[in-house]
Each structure stands twice: as structure tokens, then as C-alpha cells.
Amino acid sequence: MLKSVMFAALGAFAALAPAHAEEFLLSGAAEEVVQVHLGNGEEAIIGPFASVSKACGSLGSAKAQILRQPQHGSVAVARQRGAIAFGDDNPLARCNDKPIVGAVVRYTPPDGFVGTDIFAFRVVFRNGETRTKWVNVEVGCGCSARQRTATAL
Image (cartoon, rainbow, N blue to C red; front, side):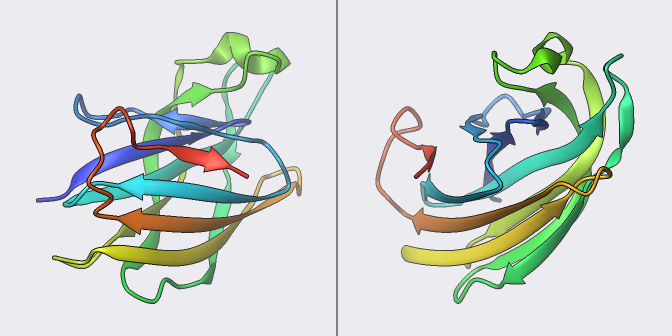
């Protein structure tokens, strides 16, 4: 059974994570490269992504599209319930931790895989705003939960 590592997106929101999952913020940049480090037996869930009203309600789930499949693992788009997670400098930060449903991108490495994988996806919000994320995944990094990161370059 895979353990999930959650990655939240600024300007979107973070999934309600199981007790064993980690959460990391991505930037709200239109394009970015993200480094993800996973221990053995873990998967990455990036998002969820959704449009949020000033009253902290859903304006609808964003649409996610895979632009480049990984060479080794698999990546899929799904809808998932989560909690809003805006950056502190965003006017909607007061909505943080409110539940909402949005698109997530889930990366799953093959059993026993250790190494690097790369994939890309695009998120389109209801207002037409788009974000493209290139994700470099290192699987089997031999690191502790505290050392695992998702960082925007």
C-alpha cells in the first residue's frame, strides 16, 4: 500500500491529508518547476486546485490536463475534497482550512522503482487563469519525512 505525500498549491487548496501525509505549498506562479522527493512506497498528490469566492465558497473545480506522462510511474487527474490553503499574503488566506472539492494530480511510482521521473501538467481555473507545473520526482530518496520536500525553483 502506498503512503501519500500531499502538496498544496497556493491560490488553490490542500487536500485533507491522512494523518501520515505531509503538506507542502507550491507557488501561484503561472509556470514553475517543482522538485518532489518521495520515500519508498509513497505517492505524491499535488493540489487540489479550485476557484474560490470572496465568501470562501467554491466557484468550481479547476481542470487539470497532463502535458507529459512520466517515463516510469503513472500520473492521473481526479477530483478530491480538500481544505483551502492560500499563502499568507493572499486576500483569501482567511479562507484557509475551509473544505472544498477540486482537481488533484496523483503521481504513483511503480513497485520497487528508485530513481528520477518527470511529468508536466496544466491547470485551468474558471476565470481562464492557467498554471503549468513541471514536476521532477525523486523516488526512494532514503530521506526521513522531515527531509521530504516539494520546492518551486
